[in-house]
Figure 1 (cartoon, rainbow, N blue to C red):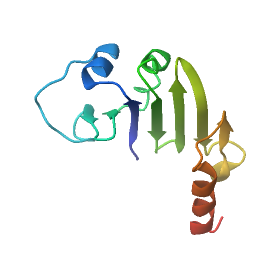
Figure 2: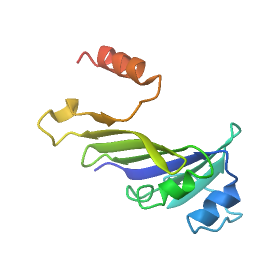
Figure 3: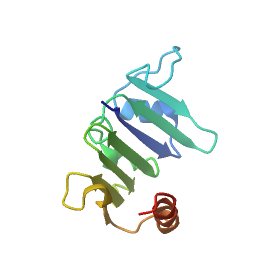
Figure 4: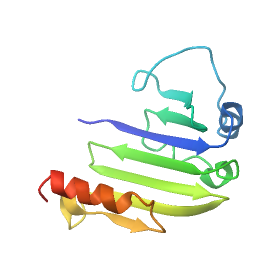
Length: 134
């Protein structure tokens, strides 16, 4: 049995703005994922990240609304189902999405994409294929 988790990251927004938008309150408690059901951290490069021990958490948020603060990237992984999705939003609109579902006919090779993918996408795919002899 594997992990099921999701995360979202917002660039250019304060922690208080992000938490207020997703209806969460900051606490003074410190913990790490996966010990806590939710954990948030302000990174040095202007990103605020929330990690949840729930694969549906990120998708259930108002990503269009959050993207009014700045770029949003989210990811959901359900290891036990071998499904993963990542997406980006900006200015209320989805930019790109990458989805893997090994239950599709292509199996472990299944991958669908939409939108203009990040510049590093092709290189990451090529390196993964080479490293895994696919």
